[in-house]
View 1 (cartoon, rainbow, N blue to C red):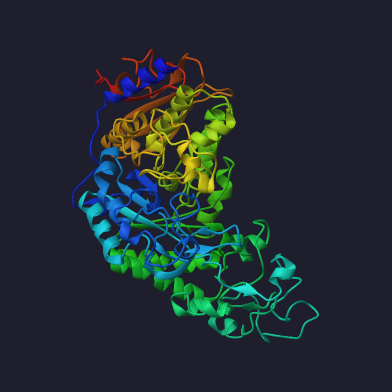
View 2 (tube, helix red, strand yellow):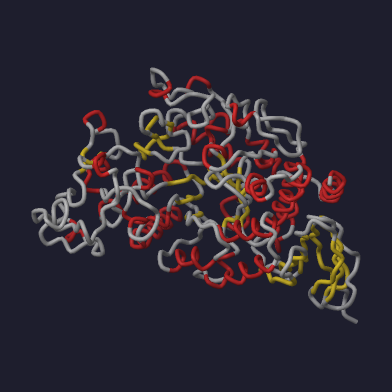
Length: 606
């Protein structure tokens, strides 16, 4: 298998490396043109140790800082990320997606189970950066530096919830179990037998100001209260009023409570309320106006009502256009672990999200590279592109990915599927996954550290390793792929085989318009592991790029269909044949987990 990886890498290097696209026209690039890098700034690089504790005093349960604990702040910040932009440029990155930067509750959780808000999803102040990461001026300097290199900057945002601040008087006794609208209607205090409250309130389906003016008492399910020490902790100030939250208990992520329940105990915003909608629009318009960022990834989008998105999305798009950002990216997280395009596509239709993270793509690639399923899975997933609002054209703009900070790294998922896999084979499979990611339709997302061969122990905290020297024992004992290094040392190796592979494929992608926003048609696939081939087409000229993959652990030598006008092929990556075997047919000979990216050449007609 070592020889296999060496052969694949040698053929891929012939394309060479190139810097990320630069120049003053970065705002003109369509979202489908980007190569996105998703990073948790706390885990990337420490550029200023003075902010490690967020300027808080006390032990780790006050400051949130403990670099030896995977659940606490480690010291990465905006300055560190800014210093490493040249590294990302060499990787071929054209857009940064940064985990939430807003001020978080430093520490929360039951006694003995505390962890910190290093990840950014426990927001208390939506109007300023978390002090552990830096100041707004330092964030603006990061954005400016990225823009000067032609990189866009996206930030992760949350509209579904805030940090866990609100308590329920009955909560401990009831274990914060979800209380439904049928058993605990808005019209009765504490259940059906309770006293009448909120007279005239017509329910959460009427989001008019007049209707919600009648929702006065939030104690219809539980009796919410804010501990005295935290009564003014949230910013803007309106967020401190429990009436703007659902207050129904913890979500089980199914049925009604998926939308109205508290996400892992976090305070669930009443997004049907017009004041909440107005407030969230104001917050996120402000970040665009002040910092000139280029896009938002929307956390937990499926847990928010569709009416919220129908108000929020056009307001944010209008604000972005007013700031000279015609290609402002907006994509929602609709978590799913099956290659079912229909489920996530509904959010582009009913909710009017411009795009969603392509969880169907992720699941399909894992199925064929991890679970041994036939490449028909990929074909069927791409068949679902017509289901998105706007059809296949919108599908080409979806951010695609292999793994992330929640489910775990792609390498980790493959290792779960093959517990005894050798490191060399795992590297080959991961490299093939990235070849698919960077050549098939969509805007590819690289999860930070994947380019350095990180292999975590699982999802969530276990998938959020440090790029700078780590002090977390459970990170440092991981066997990385493609390197003898561990996370105990700094991992910014530009000669790592995955770094070089991603950089080379990114350069090929930028040089071929067909691989950016070009249409894609599936050519051939199988019910078993093996061939999967597609053609992509230059939007302006119609020129064809033929791409083939071998998902099997053995070589293949088979025929595939190709455009009938093609006579010869130019190798962009992999062992492309010099010519077709007949009009409409090409021979595909690939090693185990190999690929080819070939520019089809048409001979002049006689």
